[in-house]
Image (tube, rainbow, N blue to C red; front, side, top):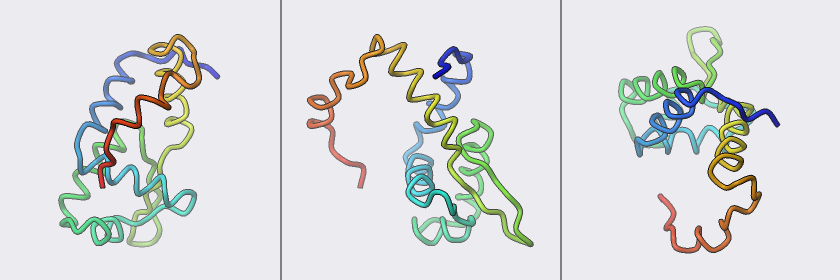
Length: 115
């Protein structure tokens, strides 16, 4: 997989995921692949205001982590899975010396889930 991405893009994507709300939105959209969700559904599921969710979705979209498709008066959001795979590949190759497990089996045991 091609992992020679612009470091600025990588940083922008990681910064977008650094917000707890944006990370939760992103996780929800990944779980809902390939159908995605409209912003109102996201707001309801995360018990957040529609305006707040829209703000965070714009940040995720600007970073290239989500795509949007108009459906009548609604907009359906989906995780940009090719971008996600490229980001994971970049981190694996450049931060883990290409090791697929990257020591994750032991490292993730000490990390508590966000939910």
